[in-house]
Image (cartoon, rainbow, N blue to C red; front, side, top):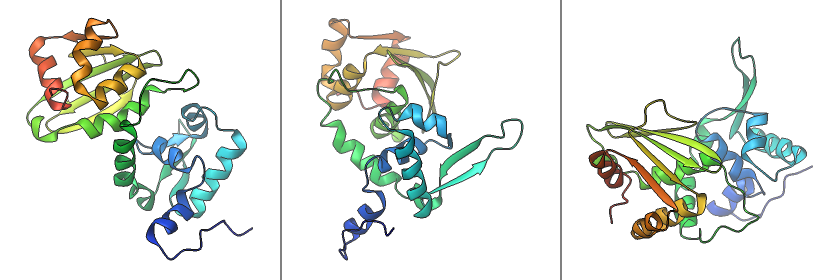
Length: 216
């Protein structure tokens, strides 16, 4: 069956012909940080059915945005990853996230959250020019778990899970973190209300606030 198309000779329409179907861009979001197993993708995409996920992965493979390979032993797992063409979507995903951050208001009770979804907003707020020569490890705690953010001489790397020896530990729920990302001026109120706790050496905390442009 021929894939659906807008039938328009327009760059945006052509892009949406490839990634405009439901779940397609969220699969790209999950793969931005590296290869994922099928079960990892299911866990990171609450609400998607197995049939829908399989269909969208096949569509993205056929479009040349996603490839599948088997990891070497002892893992020997099949993983999906973005191709070079798929990774070219990263700037567009960043701008979509930047726009979407303005829309994150109170969390709807039906809205799910995964802690690794913080990675892209953190990259958006990250100021590499303020992180030259700085080495810090920041751990974010939410109801969903922990995310480790490592700042190393102007580079920010994130991974799910706790850090062994974090310099700064930030604990809040998803809605509070979204609120602060959208408007850093709400940080003080969130701390006063007990919705946000920040633990660490005051100088290192100040560094983190500047580097993540939360000092306004």
